[in-house]
Each structure stands twice: as structure tokens, then as C-alpha cells.
Image 1 (cartoon, one colour):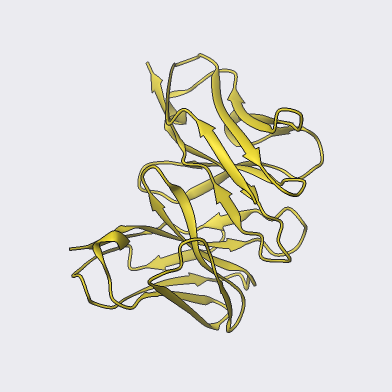
Image 2: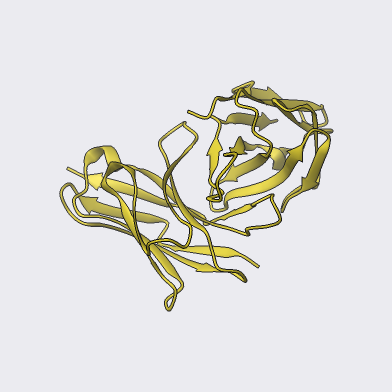
Length: 114
Length: 115
């Protein structure tokens, strides 16, 4: 257990509304990631962070923004939700120390955009 | 560029039979490779990892995987399937970037175990 929580766990929202998903970690890891999971696509990286206020885009970043004002929290915002953003969103951290690079995942947030 | 191909989106085996889930990778750098398992309505759990040490890697729940550079493969095996192994399995490769270590996932293989 890497001490990762995500909130909310489930959300239904309407097209055009803003949505913010929160990822919280308790173990002071530097690297944090947001992925989306869709059938037939596996997991795809949206954005990642390598420190407070340090973020970068991943493979599918269009329509998403992120913020990290504290080490423990990484927020994913959909500025104006669309039906194509209906997905399961996972937050992950990279274990600090060593060189094995494995990531550990939160329980996920299921987002439905109607 | 890094990518992973998982052959077979669905695999069915009988309880007690060999499990073989296939993963082939493409990487511009010596790869770090991972297998994750996802049970229904849960996050991903790390099964095992290859990071350029031993080519045969043992993981949790009796799974193992062998890194074969000549075949660019990292197939996951288990000698005897158990009902509790039913889940979705993902292979991933790291880009071993300058610190960020982004993972590139395959599309997953759903394993069904038949009693």
C-alpha cells in the first residue's frame, strides 16, 4: 500500500461542466502521475509531476490541466468536460529511492460525463 | 519510442493449467519492464519487474516472466492457474526518462480461469 487515495471515487457530471479530481499521497513521493483507462487502450498518461509546481504533459493531455501546490496533492482538472472524457482515472506515484522505477497506483475514479 | 504489444486480449485456461500471457516490447533504450494485475474495480498491483538484473524474474502469487532480448519479449507465466488469478494483466515498459520514468502500457489481457 503506497498510501494513495483518490477522490471522489465516482462522479457523474454534465457536458461542459468543470471537474477536479484529487490524488493524495502520504509518503512524500516526488513523482506523481495521472492516467486514464479505457477499454482497448490500456492506461495512457495524461500528465505527470516531478515536484511541487513542476508538471509536464503526457500522451493524452488535451482537455486536461493539473496542479501540484503541495507534495502530497496532485489535482487533475477537466476545464469543460466532454463525453470522450468518460473514463476511469488513476493516480500513481513512483517509489522514491533505488533505480527500479516502478509505479504504484491509487484505487481509481470512475467519471461519467453525460 | 517505447511501446508494448500484448497478444490476445482474452485468454482462458482451465484451473491447474499453465498460464502464458504474451508481451512484446519496443524500446530505444535498454528496457525496464513490468507486469501489473488489475482485479475488478480495483487499481493496478505490481506483479513483477525486470530492471536488467536476472532475466528470469519471479513475482508475487507464483508468477514469473523471462526477459528475452533477442525476441524483444517479456512473457508472463504461471505453472498452475488458480481461480483467484482471474483478472486483467498489463505489461508496461519504461522510457527511463531523465527522472520522470513514464510507463507505456499494453492494452491488457483478460484472464479467465475455468473450473
